[in-house]
Length: 411
Image (tube, rainbow, N blue to C red):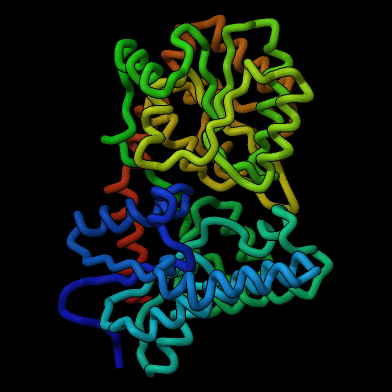
């Protein structure tokens, strides 16, 4: 028995909510754009995810949070938290009619949940797994679990099972594709690399007058050289190195770094800013909802994505990078993963060595000295993104992979 109806349709599955907190995060934005793009291509796209409904919060999340306070091991706390969301997603899926042409989970937890539900119901529906990163290794990078722990082994096994269930796997950069091949033995012909996309209509260049208005709205100094770092505050995003770069730029009082993001490293970042005497050179704005993040890009002069290698995790095709490029701003990125795959040094942006604040500061100074370079990099970046990373083109590429999975059959 198949789960297919006459109209083409897909169930996009995620263990977390793509609309939570105003839609913060690359994966969440990816899912929302994909749903919109597929609709424009004639595919009905429904999203199954875990939302913080009153019943989930009061019956599960709040009691679970109290229970985790009694757990001494951080890995146990992480495992309990993930289990709560996994169980809630499975409850939601039990109430979901699976009469779809395809299913497209966007994380390994969701892949196993929907895979087991389909198996239980005796349905054969092509499953295309989209991988945005490295689930287990990112948990280790964020110090949620130890690489030497049983939890690490457990989640690696979850990743393996998810890859085995999938008919095809879409990776947002080639390094993730290499990871699933080398770690889980997935054949190359089952993998497609489709980088992230950006809404090029919403994220676009602005005039100097519009930039001034955006700065007034956000209460940002009119005459400063604004470097925007729209990154979550976690180790792999390397935000501390962007902060340290401001020490090198401190002699140039015009430079101002704005951090638009939150996360477990916030306290240490705040301490670093204070210790380096950079309170007037670094503004920490915390989590910024995606619905207003375009105002920050409009106000900025340059974008910095200072990612570093952390616990074996490399940056994928950063959505923040693509959004910055789409707005015609020069981007400074590190020489990792999807960043170096996307940016052409000296043509569509500047690439610097990871973990080197001095390299970031030199790149910023180079931009501040050369307005023609800034304009040239920004214009070329915008053109590149329009050609290669528009939401509609991305949706068509994903749809082609759905159809390929259906034609090729299970692995």
